[in-house]
Image 1: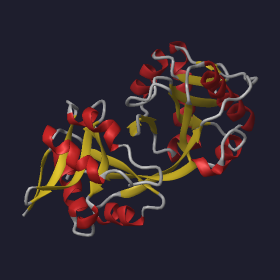
Image 2 (image 1 turned 45 degrees about the vertical axis):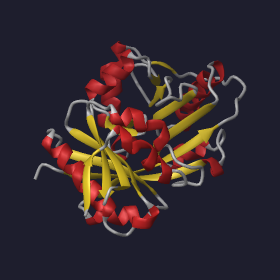
Image 3 (image 1 turned 180 degrees about the horizontal axis):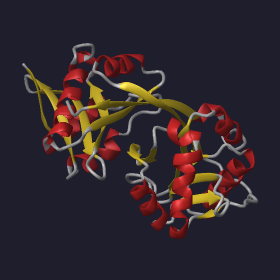
Length: 291
């Protein structure tokens, strides 16, 4: 009989055995298993049937405790279409609810129709569409008027986001950290500014914002991540992206990952530096879990 339980260290090899060709390029579960297994703010679940490991997923409680992030749902090929993924989803939601989260979120690839249907069948709603680009070539130094934000800019940036930015709303008021979509509230913004991760155009009259994660994700310290892009001005967008491109070129990075709301005005600027074949579209889903 199938059961869902917390993962054990002895599960690793068997689980990784079927988490290999999930995407055209492979899978990332082998990179994150240890992080997820030892996650004090989450739970790694395994689905087991008669002693055989047949599924895995991970849930994490986001900073502030108000929301939970669901990820890494994988099912053994021989057991797909047997509602294993739905059972894992319900286990993650129960964990999130029991730990005080009021909502849960997850991303699904635009091409993964079965997962989209599963999310919608279980009460999730699509709240945003994000595009991901991978850049693996360096560029000449770019001219830019963008600058690092300072704590003194906090109120001006926040007012820009909540009062003037259409992109902030369409981004579901979130940013990305290691492939987790977190609420971009004022406290998160202040912390990111203190970490020198926020870049802006303008001074008191802010007209553009990006957030950069220069520390990479998981074991990939060689990756520069741009995890939020926001401006309606073509000039501001060019300056913001140029700032990120320059940081990428000056660092010891082999790749630059760029994630943002799928806005045509933004992607038109990004096309200068990116290739369409290195992009992917993701749907951000959310569900209220207070009841």
